[in-house]
Amino acid sequence: SVTVSVYLWDAVKQEKVTDPAIFESLSAELIVHDSLTNTDERYAMEKDKNAFSYDYPVNGAAELAFSAEISSSSAGSSSTFTTTNNHSVASSIETVKPITFEQGRQSKDYNLDTFFLKDGKKPVSYQIVSSESNDEMMIKDHQLVTKADGNHEMTVTIQAKFSESDISQADVTVIKYPIWRYYWLPELVMLIVLTLFIIWIVKKRKSVCFHGRLEGYFLDTASGDEFPVQFWTEDHFHKRRKTTLHHLFDQVGVTEHLPESRHIYFLIRENDQLTFMHKTTCHVQLKAEAVASNRAVSIKNNDRLYITFEDGITEVELRVRKILT
Image (cartoon, rainbow, N blue to C red; front, side, top):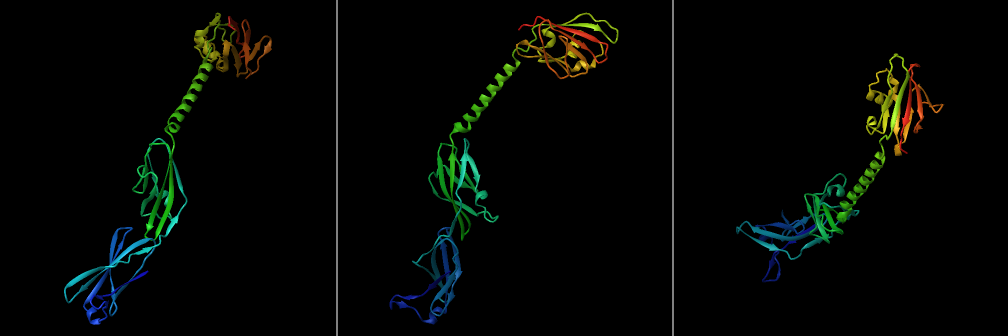
């Protein structure tokens, strides 16, 4: 605390006034001006025979100017005396860990309360006390507001005030990256990925047509119905990479009940290579060799494929003609 005392001075005798009778009709108020907050406070001073005094508590950082106003109840007048002795208190500021933000192509606001929070308590106010770039950063409603222009690094010192005696301070750095890092680079990466994807799709879909003819001969049927020789060309495959025998039968109107044909597949590989595979219990034979379920085999020009269906009666012979290799 600071004890402020006010005396009366006899300008003629050049000495303090010590007559208690003079002080009986006088009263005094202490006026305290805080230059940091630009506020004034008034306090009634205590009378002590031939002087007035007041113990003013000082907590934390402050720069104070004291003055006194003395009034006389008998004379009905008052006078103000301003002291020439200002009182400064050493700043009690806690320096906290520096803060760094990375900023891209847009202006951005940073909530300072998130970084200066102390024991769950938010600062009352913030102030930039030093800055390299005052025109690029400002504080508004507890937010550090930055511009997006430029490509450089800025540092400011910010004080967070919790109370007159509790102030935290930190260096805050904002790193502004060039616009191409946030605009051109992501778009360039996306363009490269898209280009590679398109190339992959084109290569994947290249040569999906079946350039040839598949012939089907029904050797026997469980229903007893007879079917003429069936032919399937490129149009029947509809440029599919994978086609079922059921789909091919349906294309030419084969009505024999063969549900397992849904699980007999023809796959078109690169260079018009036709591959056969089935997931059934049918007996399948290619070049006098049995083709087991889930096994993929290549069918070449003039190859003959024999399929005995699960009913044990219906049998079809498939022949491949004119495959371009």
